[in-house]
Length: 428
Image (cartoon, rainbow, N blue to C red):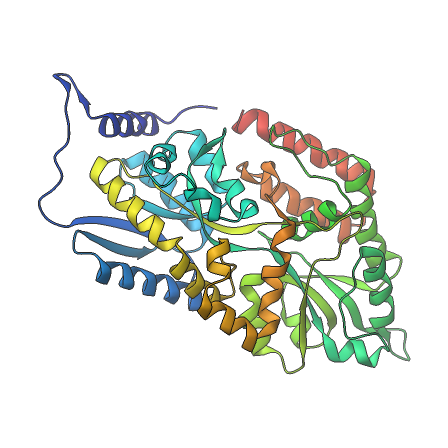
């Protein structure tokens, strides 16, 4: 992979300001006399964007020595592009909200600050409060490069009224086998043989199709890829998950590819997959009773974690210090409890999940607690998601399975080869 000269220069800048070295020898940077201003690049709109602005406002009110300026940069993909452009120009923010798989890209290039030295100055158990499954993908090569910010897992959203109409219990299917039977009973065909209601819509979003499929693979006790980027798509658990999904679409005709939650709202499907971060939108827009539930298990329960992490590209020693102070505040107990209540994203720590305000909120809104209950089953996303074209390659895989109806083993083998080629050419 060719190295961008600007990126290499920026790495040198990071090393320079972090160590304080100059041609004249060891130099200690003096702390600025006034408040230290740092720039925070954020993503997400709506409630999630407003909640971040509130956290910035609260932090600034609590400190006289640091000023955080929040700058909205678009969706995660846009932040990825803008950060790459900023690196080439030598102009980067002090903090950035990254889609968690993108951490690997920038950590590998050395343009994110290794946070281990900051953690070493904190109390010994500093990291212990973070939920392990939400902290795991903040690491690269066993070094910490981020803290968990707005984290999510996939959920199953069910039209509870349709369960009753189909003579099913008002509870979610526990396994994928049971899920398949639910879908058969929830499917309706009119007198002309046209399907007017499907059991489930398999989400085909450009950046989410792979995420929900990973949940099925994990349930079958398989994996897409491991931490060494070895691809496991042709192994029995992954093939079993892919075969199940394809059979539900083309054999059972109880499932349909779906690109929008509108299919749930307009009652085309009885169930859809969605993020915990979508819960507020789903619950508010529905004209029927919605049951948020775990992703089905099979051999075991398991779901991929998603959402964002907070990372530090800053190249200045004292701005790095200020950025770390804000990182702790943003990912701290009070802020995370507030963010979870307002957005539906999961609190990132044990203390936040037990925060009195959040406990009270969940007691009044028990449907929101399902995200917390599922936390015990989270694990990091497949490593290949961090490849430049990894997400798109897996999206095409799901499309080949559920739209083109291609042979499962052929699709898995081709996708494995495509991912290995992408790794060798653009990441290795």
